[in-house]
Structure formats: C-alpha cells, structure tokens
Length: 277
Image: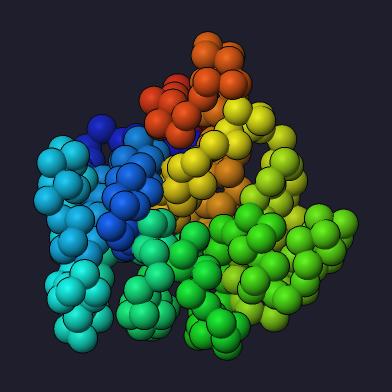
C-alpha cells in the first residue's frame, strides 16, 4: 500500500484537523495514545476533546496535540457538553470518538452529535459499547463511518456470540456492514476490513500487539488517514500500517516486551516504507 509524497508548498492545514473525543478518569492514556498516533500518522492538527476531569493531566502530557475540554460536574459531563462539542466539531475535518470514554451517560449524546455531522467518523472502544440501537449508525451518506470492534465488542453490537463471530467473521461482517452502512474493522489475527461485500484481509501484525492500548493507536492512525481519503481505503491503509509498525517494533524489541507506545515510535518508519516512490 502506498502513501503519496507530500507537496513542498503545504502547511499543517493541508493535512487535516483531526478531532479525538474520549478519555475519562483513569483512562487518559487511551485518548492520549490515539491522539499521538494520529499525529505520527500525518494529521496536521490533532485535537484531544476530553472531559475536564482529566484536563490537567492531558495538558501536562500533551505537546503537539491541542487539548479542548468538555465541562463536568461531580465527575460527570454536564448538559452543555454536547453543545460545546458541536461547536468544537464545526471546524474539524475528521472525528474519532470512543477511546477511554468510560461509561458516562452522556456518551450516547456525544455520539449522536458526532454522527449528525457530514464528516468521516470513526467509533471505537467505549463509543461502541454505548450503542444499543443500530439505527443510530445510519447516516445520509453511507459508508462514511468506520467501526473498529474486537470480537467481544462486535458480539455486543450484533447479538452473535464471540464463537459464532470467530467461526464466520466474513459473512456476519458483510451482513452488519450492509445493514448499518458502515465500514467494519473487525480486529484480531488477520484483521478484516469490510465494506458491504468487499473484504480486505490484513497480513501485517504479530502477537506482540496483544497488549493494552494498541487498539487506541489504530483509531488514531485510521483517523489521520480518513482525511481526504475514501473511508474504505483509509481503513485498509490504517490497519496495514498499524500492523507494519508492530512488526518493525517486534523485530527490534521482540514480541513479549512490546507495549502500545512502541507502535507509535515505529509509525514513522512504517509510513516511510509505504511512501510512494
């Protein structure tokens, strides 16, 4: 898979404003790693939109990503959080929602607000776990939403058991993609990317990536690639580059001691390998 060379006369705005919505108390690392992955994957301006309960720790950790907070009261998002998010999203090009969101009752309202936009959207992790009615996913422009569940999250969405999903992932995935009008990234060994009847089977990655946070990295990578790309192509490219970064990390460090931040460190080298000659 190839990534085009950058033109000389460009600036950060030419590479997209990528919004990542998520995080909660104890889960700041998820949204931080997703944000850093979006930057390492080429996002021009990356915004971490988080509850103010983790605002201080994110400000301390963050250098290149821009931190925006949503108001909280008693550690819960307030009624005004949705309106403030909508204002933030007005200037964004791509939205990723879910990493580290936790179980705040306002999560579903944030997801609804994101899906009302005309922007490419990726939903992951607690964002997926907040969805209980698949009708919510239907948008006027089909296949502009990417979902990135692992088998247990996909089981919660579909009602199929994890065993059934693992035994017949392609057919169940095709059925789901057509029903919802979404791009499905079904994570696992040989991750699948499905758009209706089209199926891509990924061949990069290794067992060292079976560690906390690698899914957050994938969300950020695909989020960056969604800017000015077809959603299906962006999802395929993101999955491939994510696995390739993991393979490069494993080659140097071995599989057993790998952690998610290793993938972020190796992302530039993975992208360099995919650069258009």
